[in-house]
Length: 234
Image 1 (cartoon, helix red, strand yellow):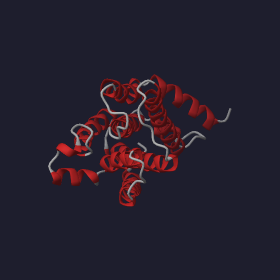
Image 2: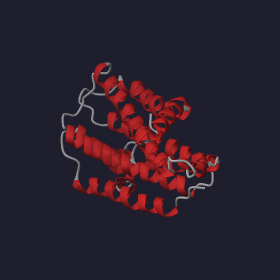
Image 3: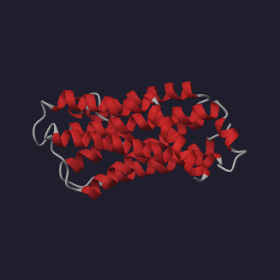
Image 4: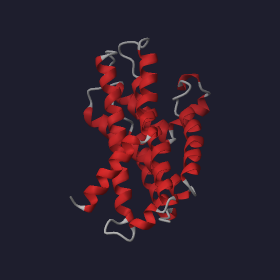
C-alpha cells in the first residue's frame, strides 16, 4: 500500500469516528423525518432545505475544524518531513468531506423516496450541477475559516457563527416567503441561499437559473483563492 493510500485509509477511519460527522447525517435526517409526514406529495421545499443543511454542516463545521486542528497539533508540519506532503492531506480531506456530503445527501434522498414517498427530481444533470457547485462554494468558505482560525476550537466557533446567519438568509430557518422582500433578495445571493434556491428549482422541474450557478461558482473560485492566499501549514 502506498503512503497516499495509507493516509487516505487513516483519514477515513478518523472521519468515521469523528462525532461531528454524524451531525451531518442526523440533524438534516431528523428535520426530514419530523416535517416529512406533513408535506404535500409534490413538495419542492423540504428536501432542498435538508440537503443544504447537510452540506452547510460539513463545509462550515467539520472541514475547517479538522484542518485547523491538524495545523494546531503540528500534523501538517510533520507531514512536510515525510514523502506525503501536507498538500496531499488537504486533497484527501477535501475528497473525504465530499464523500461525506454525498453520503448524507444519498441517505436523505433514500429515506425521502422510500419511507416518506416524497417527490424526487428527474433532472440528474441539473441536480448534480447544483449540488457540486453549492458544495464547492460551502467548502471554499470552510477552507477560508481553516486558513484564518488559529486553532480547531476557533474554527469551530467561527463556523457556527457563520452558519446560523447564513442559514437564516438562505431560508433554512424561516421560510423565504415570510421574510421581508429585501432580506429574501439578499439571501438569494449568499452561497447557501443560492444553493438552496438552485436545488429548489431542480425539485420544481426546471433548470437552476444561470445566475444562481454563477453566484455559487464565483464564491467557490474567489473564496478558494483567498483561502490559498492566507493558508498556513504551521
